[in-house]
Image (cartoon, rainbow, N blue to C red; front, side):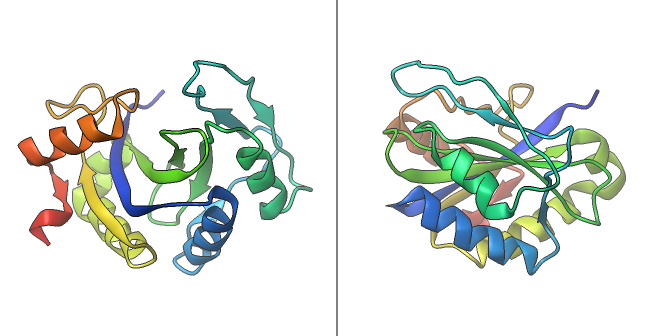
Amino acid sequence: MSYYNGTLILLKEKKEPKSFILNFNENLKSIDVVLQKSDYEIIVFNDSRKEEEKEPIELDESMTDEDVIDLLCSWTGLGVLSYRHPDFKFELGIDYLSWDDKYIYGFKVSFADNDLVYKGYNKQRELISKISEFIDYEYIVGDINEDSQNYISMEESLDEIKEHILKNSFKIDSRNW
């Protein structure tokens, strides 16, 4: 089992989830970040803001990317999809985030710490930099998971998260680019 290290990317403006994720998914393919749809993959859904839960859904190889994105967007809280990139041994998780159960406001990209031991933060930073070219972002901050001194809970309000970002520095931080 591996622990994951997250990088939070907040968009400058909220977006309609399906069209944003479909377009973003196509852009990810151009840098060899590919959605995983094998028989052992699942979509893990975020709780809604009303704390409603949805059971994970198993994927299969016959599904198209659009099928998977449709399933993700069928839930107001959105959720996590798994991706692969050739520079990383383990999967990347992208957790698409909504703070109002209607729009997407950002996403968190998670890397396995084991990959970071061997590939280092430079590979993570390099991929995040490429991803940043596809979106109009407000903030990109990395190393925010529970074991970090700069932990950010996605349960906090968007305003609280932005305030936390402004008061701290991060291993990956778009304000320093």
